[in-house]
Length: 146
Image 1 (cartoon, rainbow, N blue to C red):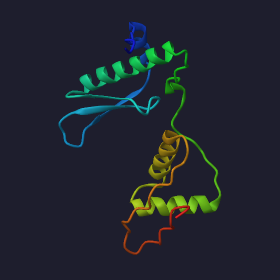
Image 2: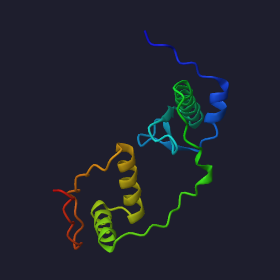
Image 3: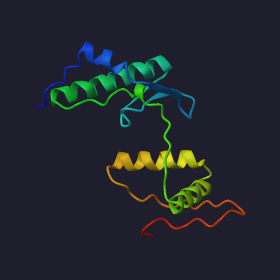
């Protein structure tokens, strides 16, 4: 039988230190909360307050589990601005720009999506090349390994 996880008030207080972003769901029926330091956790609710409370409980539970297993918790992201200057080979820049154009998104949004996917999977997994093309646009290079 599984041991019950005890979430302490100190875990809830620590959980509130993590920046959270409340987002209205596309269907307009509720809200969810994104927690940058914990990309696989979220909170949901009918109101923003309910969604934040749910997110705090999710983070507090994760903190309690990590403490129980003697694992470190991620630092709150207060110390990071979210901006990064990056140097890359011109060929990578070109491929990223083509990918962004093919998906109809900004270069920044495409880079963030690819980095998030790569870090979330533990190793880069090639994403399928979108089928949508813009009229008059450049050819989209095939995905690596395709």
